[in-house]
Image 1: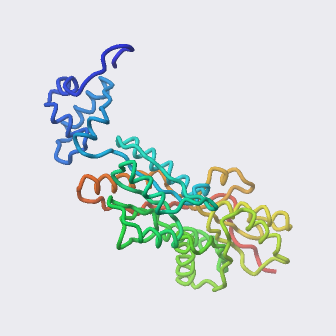
Image 2: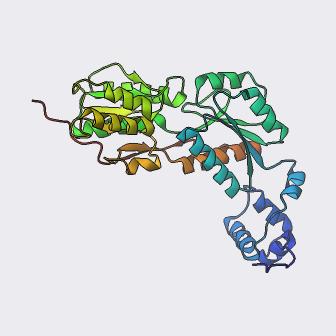
Image 3: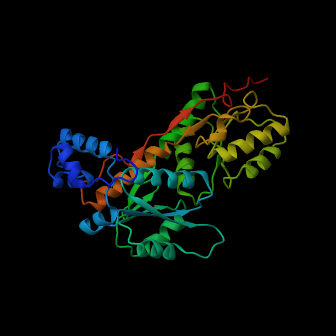
Amino acid sequence: MASPGAEKPNIRQVAQLAGVSYMTVSRVLNDHPHIRESTRRRVEEAIAELDYRPNMTARALATQRSRRIGVLVESAVAYGPTSTLRAVESAARASGYMVSSVLLQAGEEITPQEGVDHLIAQGVDALCVVAPRSSSIAALRRITIGVPVLVVKPDKDPTFLTVTVDQRAGTELAVDHLVSLGHRDILHLAGPLDWLDARTRERAFHARAKSWGLRERPIVVGDWSADFAYDFARGIRELPEYTAIFVANDDMAIGLVHGLHDRGFSVPDDLSVVGFDDVPLARHVIPPLTTVRQNFDALGVAVVDVLRAAIEERELPTVTRIPAEIVARSSSAAPRKSG
């Protein structure tokens, strides 16, 4: 490692230490696909030993790329969009890319067009859009962007690249978990159905419930907030016929558990509750919340991998749907016995 005050190591010193040409070092730095793994390893070891830091400005001039990804994020106060942004930033940094982000918040005047214009003006090589509402995607289709665009959304899209945590499979895991405990009558407390994830979870819930032969009942549409679910639970006058509730996110699930407790119902003795997201608080509420975990770190890596391939005109990765995982805790149990 270079000592403080010492001259910074350069690419030729890396090449000399690794026993390769400086062009080979450049190819490794730019993630060229046709490099032997043993050669790549020697170069990476030399970079680490010398603590070499590439000159990003020089690299940008050489490749005519800024090595910057723009991220347009709507509803950034919500757990999913916030976690996605952090994950993309982390994965981009690990890949030698920088991130510029624009947040679109309710009540602010900035439009998707203005957000895209701001990022394009910064010379981004590609754009990641975390706009979870169908109306936002419709607005995005009317914008001419000029760089690769990836949208984090549940289904493939004819216009944009897509990457997602598998919302459908995650919902199926939640329903299957409750069925395995013996539940045959499950209520779904959905998120706002203009949100793509909420709509996908709602449809997947109905399809999976039907495949199990569960009782069909209308869903309750919430607004993602704990307050909504708390008020809903407080409005339940007597123990319902359904024995479990699948909730579209953990914030509402936590508010629901609170409201059921205040109404005099026990979770899970009277009603089992399953959420979605696995927010950090989920393991600490009473009872700890059974939920579907989204792997945002893997999502961020997949987003950056796809965008880098598009930027560098390489074959796109095939892994664009990240598996979800059920995390069983104390808020779900066998259904109460009738009578």
